[in-house]
Structures are given as structure tokens and as C-alpha cells.
Length: 223
Image (tube, rainbow, N blue to C red; front, side):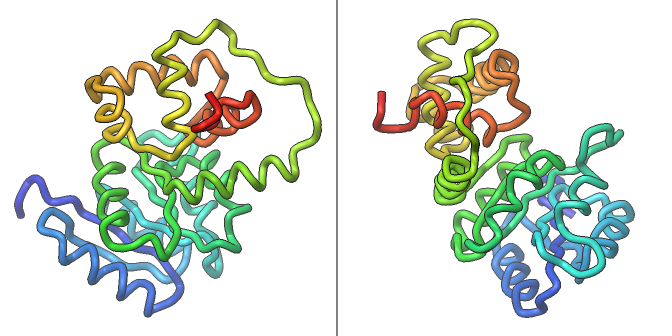
């Protein structure tokens, strides 16, 4: 097998969805679907036996849902966490934040399209993370509508000008590569700024960074 091939496991209880995702990904020259699961328990078993580079999990599945399956193979305390990309539909957005805390690395809507799907898989495989912009926006809207009034959070240390710029890009749903391109900096520099932002904001992941940006009025177009 070509050493650069990204091995993917798909888990979804709908055969039509599994087949469609598999056809899209197998058509990519650098991606190969190595397994398919119909529920969370089967997804965990296949993930542990196949050790794919990326797991693509639906959220709502029988027996064990995608959030718990994600936590089992990528959650806090996992010795060798795997890369998980969660796929969801508009009416399932309320679960995405829970999936983030369970260790998921990327998020897509099922109608995101083949190009974005392949991009998310490649990003996850390379240690990056991709959250579809419309998912990020919907998460923030849900957060704004449900979060109780609270004092604006303050960073543990002041943000630098460049960290502020990266913050806004993350809030807009851009991937690390897109941020690097728009700010004319290297990918490693983006990752350094993200690590610093997580430390200063007490955030565990990109969506928590985006939520902080939303609460402090640092969303794209507002600076």
C-alpha cells in the first residue's frame, strides 16, 4: 500500500450514507476506506482492530452513539487517541459540543460536499482540525440562545495582536492551513498561536476558542 494513503473507518447506521461516503472517499487518490460500522459498539471494535488514520462517525447511532464511541477511542485519558471527524445534520447541532469534549477533531454537516469531506479527512490525518464554518456559526447561535448571562471572560494573559487575528479566523471556521494562507504565516506558527490561545483562554479545542470570541465580540467582521 502507498505509505501516504489515509486509511478511514466510517460509522453510520444508514447504509445509503455509508455507501455514499465510501464512494466519495475511495475516489480520492490518497484516501482508502478500510472499514464500515453500523453502530457505536462496532465502530469501537473496528477502530481498535484496524487502527485507521481517521474515523468518520455519525452522532446518532443505535446501541452506542457517536459521542460515546468518540470518547472511547479519543477521549481524555486515552493512551493512543485516534483522529475522529464527526458528521452531523442541522437538527443534531446540539450534540456537537459534547462530541468536542469527547475528543472529536473535526465536524461536518452531511451535505458539506465531497471536497470539504476529503479536506476534513486530510486535516484530521495530519493533526489539523476542520470545523465547517456553518457548523461553527450554528454552534455559536445555539450557545448565544442558551447560555445564561455571565461576566465577560478574561484571558489569563493579554492576547498579542497576532493571537487576536488567529482568534478571529478560528471563530470564522477556518482551518489551520487557511489561517496560514490568509495571515501569510507558516502552519507551525499557526499551531503555536493556537496552543497559546488555548492556554490563555482555558480552552480545550477550537470551538471553545470560537465561543470565547463570540462572547467577547471578536467575531469576523466585528473588529
